Length: 63
Image (cartoon, rainbow, N blue to C red; front, top):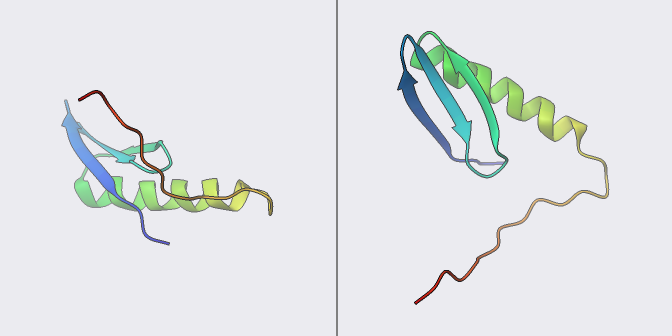
């Protein structure tokens, strides 16, 4: 599966956020934040039951 991550720096930490799942992790380096986020996403996906589905959808926002 492929996901999108946004990484920001807050103080001395890099905060990594998986956009699609809302999973967040952190690290002292970008690489550590990426690795920690990957592990957190894997654990999140493993916790899904067989009936859970992940799918894209769109929402209309004003005009």
